[in-house]
Length: 308
Picture 1 (cartoon, rainbow, N blue to C red):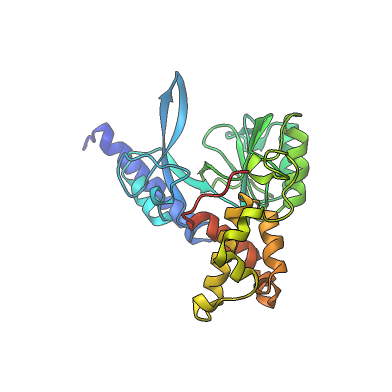
Picture 2 (picture 1 turned 90 degrees about the vertical axis):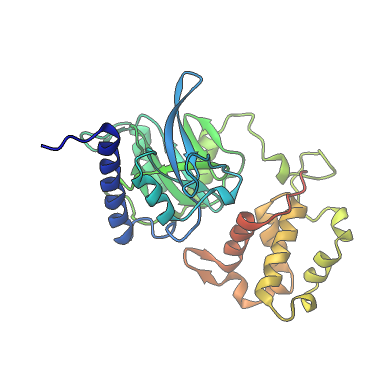
């Protein structure tokens, strides 16, 4: 009989686990997320006396991932290979718009594979999108949409950015295998659980600086951005006829000057000559061309938004 050291046993176990995950992915599980370079691995660590799930860069051993730094994330293949080493506890995915994660703690019995909390049952039924069991005793629901304010952690957790979620692929039976667009249901759920004093993100408000009134137009300072003004007039001469690149830069500029107000950015783009093209609202997978462009800019841009 050959005896293996504990480290060898752990690596063999996680190699088998990674292969099982790869097989599920190859069969189409979470196909929407697979091509995105937003994968990480995570490890359970003791922080302030409590166990925390800490994300790590799958490309650099023992280097932590940062939810705000895309260069600390990786591909699905890189994350699976890192998991095979046995040095991590599981896979993770960085949440960025338009993806939203709803976390329902203490709501799932892994032995009986049943949702044990009535409220959680109602939420899963209402959102009706891809749902999986978390590594503990909870549920994670993934939807497409936009939260009307900051993430909440009260009764349930809802996040649309600056967070990562564990990925187990332990799909909950009778929920969709696909991530669905659920804007109205997300807003209703947010209003139900958000604290009474929750206000919209400060970056999404303006009406005179600090007024708290919704931002409905570009701030006066934006008139001093010559490239923005050219693009708003449909002048793409600097891009040598490359409409896609011009679209990207215009969206980047609009997000910058509106403080990441996605709805206003979308509206202003669609009102511009570039946004009047049929392509602007053309379906692209689960979303549209303009929404996907906004999503890509938020992932790749370098200039920070104007905080208002």
